[in-house]
Image (cartoon, rainbow, N blue to C red; front, side, top):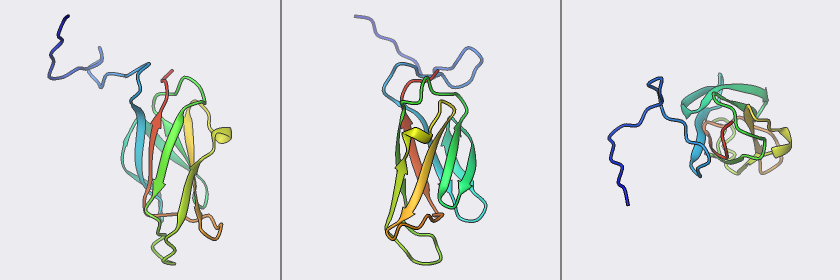
Length: 127
């Protein structure tokens, strides 16, 4: 048995190494969706598209291999104005391509709302 020990692994260009064919997060994001949308932090997410209130496309820096990736999503459950605190954040695979994943926030009453935190982790294979 061989042992590989390393403090840092980088790509040949000096950046982060790309994980392929492994079951690890291929992208994640922490979005402030109140007012002007802005990511607090991301991995493999280049930008956000505001499709409508509570409806966002998160655009990958490096595309997924196919549209069968999985997004695990959540929200803090407040829109900072109405005090509504029961939301469902969901992933719709029919509206997802290899270059983005989509999240939608819906209140308990069925109304789309922007929230202070939209969080997501994406797993699947990179292209």
